[in-house]
Length: 535
Image 1 (cartoon, rainbow, N blue to C red):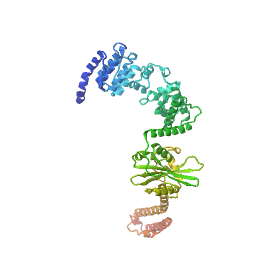
Image 2: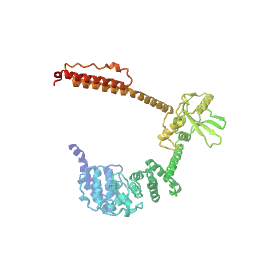
Image 3: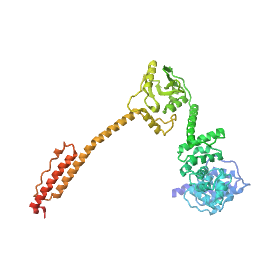
Image 4: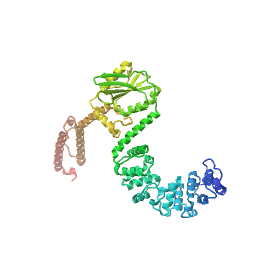
């Protein structure tokens, strides 16, 4: 404590004189920096000495009260000084004198919250609203003062939303500490429209909801979600809100009527893809083609082409189509270290093409180091034929596996990968799953072999358990009759005779017969030599 007092002494001595000087001196030029002195000076400078002088007076009284109450944690932090300055802006609306406040907290946050309630809250005000004095929105601060003097939420001035009585009730019940005013309004609206607590929380915390600038349309969107998105995930809420905000800004007439939640989710995903494409095109670039000829072969109604991809956008589209991460190779392509080729199949009478494989060519090795079908699977036999033919024509080596035959069909593997990717539709960008179909098949075979071994071991385990029971019965018999010194016991069958026995029931039957004979012999001996048994 002595060290603490030593550290505080200069501040304690200087602070009252500093406040007195800044309060009585006329406003002057602002001071640069974020020091306590500069902060106090600049706030006094911003307050007129001739008009609304109660602001300067309230700020002065607040500083001195906090000083005399020894709230040094508040006075040593410029951000907390800003809060006191905001409070002083409403110094003419306090419901109790500043000097009557009682310090009832050991923390700076708790002291400021207590001070705000003392000055403005004659009636209970939602706790989360105490934080408005740490911001710069004077309207929000006025709302706190209005509620503190007993006004209804429905009568707050310049309130941006049209509330029902239920919404006003939910607004007052907003949990304290975490919510901003805007989030509390959205949460109350959602609950007022019938949303679940979970959905209302998601709507409140949606960052994209702030991009919906029109208050009336935002209320319509929240009402739409409350009715149709009851089981939605937060990612869907964010995606749809961002899509709707963009569309409303573009057309200024986007309508929700007649739309379903599923349709909006699908449209939002497509919208995100297009935005990502544009962003990739803007941030990426193009590069010169390596001197490797493209490939084209016509076979009946099919045409096979191998083309080099030369822009970031082309790489992105390839990755979207094939569900792998080829888009990450744009830097290597631009540096000339790598080239990406796409094997495509065009069928007569069919629009577009089917991508059979994506190929990575490494310049230094002059070889193909990767060849992947969709979901990073091995390429088909058809694709392998054309890749090998193209490589032979250009003298390119192949340093990777192409087609890999196996018994398991590829369709279930692709379905499993799609499920892992979150059920997204084909064409959605995914993080590279790196699922090897061949290894999946091998794991299945290994599991089947393990199951077979477990089945074989079942009989052995049963035999071992029965042998253990056999041994326990022997111990029981010996412990029961071990006190007789003259009793002769019939020798049990040797354990070796059971070693080669396959059925466990035979072991049990032999044991039971042996045990019965021993017990009969023991009873006979008891009748002959009763003294030996202690009776």
